[in-house]
Image 1 (tube, rainbow, N blue to C red):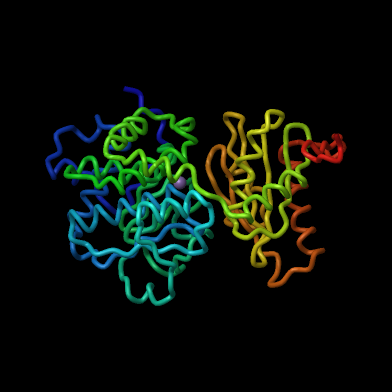
Image 2 (image 1 turned 180 degrees about the vertical axis):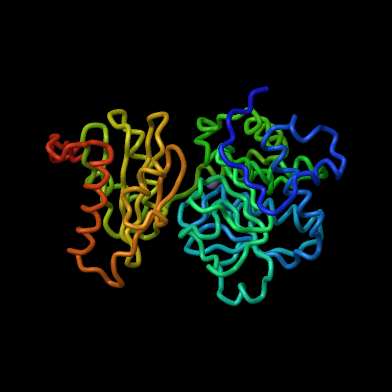
Length: 379
Ligand SMILES: [Mn+2]
């Protein structure tokens, strides 16, 4: 079976030999990356057991379905099988209608992070993000107990156990596999979260390249509640969504297969990535780039439909501080602080600066005749 190339599995200070000691049936080397990572996680949880309790499970800010699913599944695994009490916490807000529906329908016990959590919880797990990433509230001086992620890093994450698999499609695949390997009942709510997390991070498996990722998905879907899944995938949307959509279409300018849309002020930063994703489906473009203003920061999303690109790296390269952005192959996201209360001029400057740097990076000349494809006044 072909499992593809695995770019980075970092086992931190934890010894993978334990897998063998703990008597798993298959030799360590013969298993898939998902299986190996699942074993690492289970071994760590059983070694540390109750000493990890209470465990704070943190997602990145403005958590997406993958982060929520990974957190929920890790919380279930730790509580049910290792007697570790947990709390799931996130920064920012849960913005997308689908994500709100996911939390509500699956009753995911999430909490907005509070400073006192960092005193109360000696052990912290990060999922779908890493210490040092700018997209989470993890204190700089702390050492994490667990890091589970799929994003490429510039500095190796420091943690007792760190599992970074950049080819796993979705971070929650790693936790899903651990639940399957551990055995026992998987509650429908948890399985549904995992299925939705995998589907949304891999664009309905379009970006799931490894056989073990598909296998994990197929195993977990048999535990899932399809009706709840459908409800999450077809949520009601607020008025602000449609207002933003209208603005995104009006502002859209196409420069030879690159679509740019500056959304101005947005109600939540998730709208920026959502618009970038939707605009990318326009048949005449291969790239979409959106920005949105929110609480003194400019949020940016870059999406690509072409193969063999690294949108995350491209976005990093146009930021003054590369740590302000990140992502993976076809997805890049980030934000930069403009000012506490920026003037219109400052906002525009920031938008233009990023756009120009992106043009240079993608070799788009400003002299290309821009098109405004969706403006009704043009017809
Ligand atoms: Mn993810």
